[in-house]
Length: 528
Image (cartoon, rainbow, N blue to C red; front, side, top):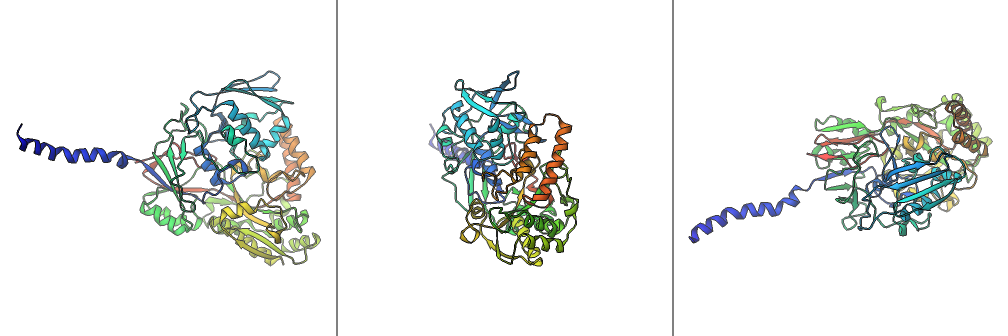
């Protein structure tokens, strides 16, 4: 054969071969996002931390899920039956569910996961009050047996409020409920790339090519969790201006919860979409520590309701554009089915004299009170700044202690005296998925056993009314009880309302398929 011909053929083939060899990496689709906070807690059973919930929905899975309108749909469950007396629920897992290590998901994983979650989550705790026991029938089938009918079983198992009832491997679920799980082997649509994880800088998720997505279209957190990119990379950018510039320049594709002061900046870009994803607004709130003076006295908590003007808080945390926020005096999010403002008329007008009077009646004498907060999430820091300034106006001696959000989240679980590592107050923002319902609203739980959410307010009358609401099957009577319950909450103030806002998200126009729902989901998102 003519050697010159061979040489010419090799010269033509070599570039093509190089292109083929390079194509897998070049063709990989990577969605680059800026999360609203760094990922510090890997165990979603331990508390209601939004960034951990987003992470958990990517890596793990739930038995049921809430769709865009928060109606419950099966997810890991294939089919299920309820006995005529409504005391036995039999569930069968859908086929093909596997852990990221290749082993099969079974009932022996499900039961301890649900039991562990229920020890800490108020919604799970309530379900367990009705539960007689669990039974693993076989690898794919399990039962929940009740002591009395409970109309929220599926709704509870699909919860997107509070901590998430995700399913862990049996050996991980055996971890004490008050000790965090640090492994990350799930059965969800993404795999957590531990090797690429750079704490404080980058978090990486790879597509789980073995995940058996449901056949239904994606609908909120329900339906088919079809992953349309090969990898998701979160880059931690504490400075909002840096995040905005990166999005506008196309260095990142999506920004989870952009800060209010940067929304007008990014909205000017022809290449950026700014939009809400939830049907209802979220809420800003201030939580007080009811274990220690002065907030162990409900009069001190009520003083804050008279002192605060919600408009100040929302302008500082959300921005001047009133399309994205509103004043609201409902503990259950205005506009939702249970968003009553009943009994709140007295606190709808700022009264600083009344606030000072109530603080005095509560026994406050100028002691230093500690406000723990962060500037890592700009909106939360802004809420704390406004609260501190107003409290000083009514003679309250407040010291702000600023740290990263992960440290604040850890500290808020401590019951120690404030001067010994505890706290008096913190501000935060709560999702409507958690706060819209007396069953899901973790901050409205006022049990006196010290097992309720951080702050631990106690009021037996409020709990009596909340339980009556949950047990009442008639919707009209339930709403009557709700009004009584809400009026009681206004009196005892488990937390201070700082207004409702519509959380916004921003993404490049070459990104599509962002799903509306209770929590930001990364499945169904494509990138051209």
